[in-house]
Figure 1: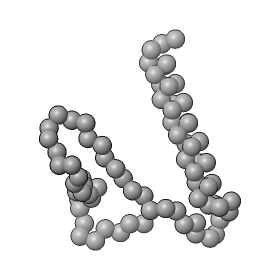
Figure 2 (figure 1 turned 90 degrees about the vertical axis):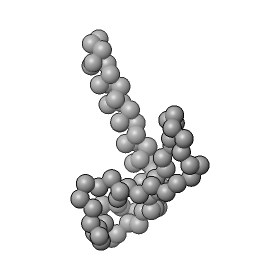
Figure 3 (figure 1 turned 180 degrees about the vertical axis):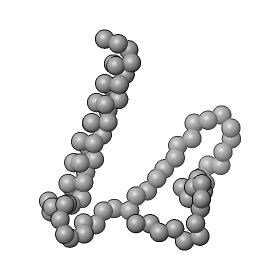
Length: 80
């Protein structure tokens, strides 16, 4: 098998596995209710963690804001 095709298949399988796990997690959050309907289904607030394994010294803990990476930051972004 072509090395590129093999790598592409591995990426696809990995993506497919991840989607399956996320689908299962979403079902557990929804409590068995339909997620595609007229009523709003509440989901947990996302939390992001960054693990650094570089060579430069970094503080033990620091707060990084995703909004700091925006090319055109807004004073009051609309999160919808």
